[in-house]
Length: 283
Image 1: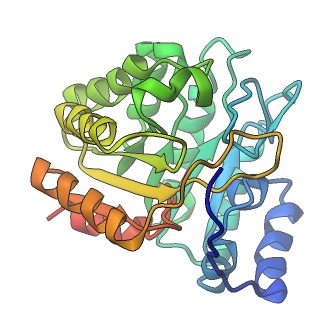
Image 2: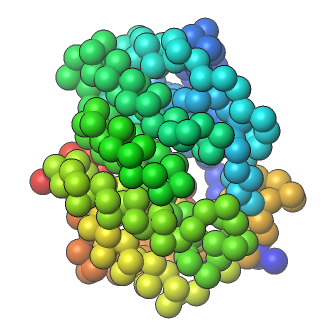
């Protein structure tokens, strides 16, 4: 059991409500709300959000995640355009798009990602696009579909160390997630690749070092490291809160391994300061 420790965040209901109201008016979802992200108020103040396409019900049931596991909804043909319209109304210069995992679809939802990227580029002139994709069950044709739309950043999270996959991501495969990142960089070296993982689930420092080594071997450009926060008592147990010095140590290890840009802090999440990461990754 983790010792008592407080992480405080500011929450402004008016700011969050304004952005979420716009999102819902276009029949869209955000991972900010569905995953109960602790940075939702900060990002809403900046009028940013991470769009979550392909519905809000996931076909997988990872023990760390607050996104709902349920029977998925039909793919919304208007969703790509609506995401782009929302991004334009918010005045976004950098748009982040993720999705639930859709193992029920033959392409895992890759075509919806492709259409969404292209619509954002069509409607939001000059905007950059980051996609946070599922593993598509390792289907390289699905990856090719997403990559064909030329996102600026291709993100796929490894989430945790190899030894905890059976506990945290039982329907995923550690090597498969790394292979997704390797394939994207090998076939489209001009696209920045990104991944992230959580700490606090019982991993050791040596396991973290090995994970970072594997991430570097996959030629990943950007890495985010954040504290796992247990969404409910039904989710994976929180074993430990990492200290400020721990996060500095993780950052040092990753930078010394040669990863271009590292965000390592308790509230770091996949899309946190994503535009800054994009700029740094391009240097």
